[in-house]
Image (cartoon, rainbow, N blue to C red; front, side, top):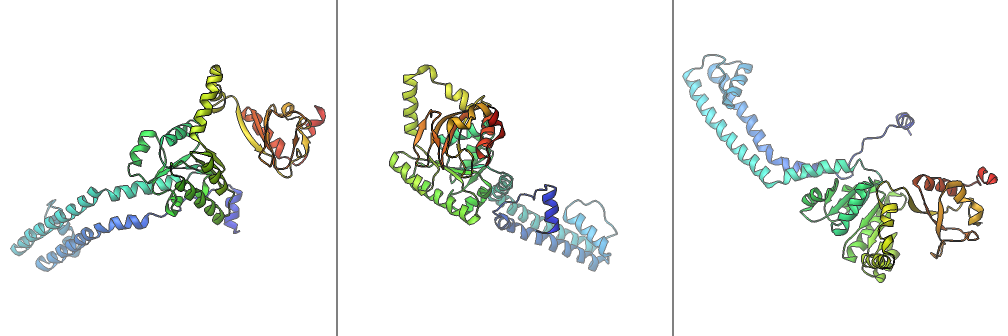
Length: 375
């Protein structure tokens, strides 16, 4: 590490975020059409300047000034008396300039009319904005689930990028308030770079076609291996248990079945109508007073091989363990105090955001806290 890098690290200076996908080539392809008008401009000014020097013996600067006034049809003044031959030359020069200007304007309007240049400039601006995101989610495919999911993300200030190949995505993004979006096939290398997946927290693929979801899971897992970074959190959807099992085996961390969730919700509401909005109010609403999170017990945690009552989590952190999932994925709801916390266990903890953070520090510690002696 160089001295400059060490100083930047010491002063906590961040490098400027730059996109991983460069649109300069596409931009250059669109701007190539303006080369001919620029060449015409240079040639016309050169033609006018040399003409006035040759016909009326103007100095270079006077000839250049006179050519500029004439070419732009400003006609502010004559820098020196012009001979009859010079006047004829001026008329010819005006008509030639008008022709070059008309041709150039037609070419300019044609390029703008196609809309490709404007599209490239907007996409380039969007890519630069996305490059500044950290720990965001890449949401693949626009549908009814995406609309509701992004609404929840906005309310909870979770950054996200929506990517879909449909051409009307910019209009949909404006309608449903997607601050960041990319038009393209989500599983391609181009889309991966444009969405700045290297700095993302996870990927959510919500296609109705299981093949699309499989392709995205495989692409994300291969990309994380290329980067050598920690695994992405990947979530997807499936229509049935068979597809859900397949997606889980391929690398999805969470597979949601919309039909099953709706059925479970309807069943719960029909049994306990008074509890209909309880979870939304306390767990999913913005700035909710309580939260729920699953915490994995690290291999070096001091709570391993301890009984739940021995940890005194409730007393020391003011959070409750409402479930334990062991390494075999067996879930024990409302565990008793004698439940053993084994290797690879996951504790389902409920409490305030502050108490859950305290519980994480408590569980992640390698050493038994001193406070436990006094409770």
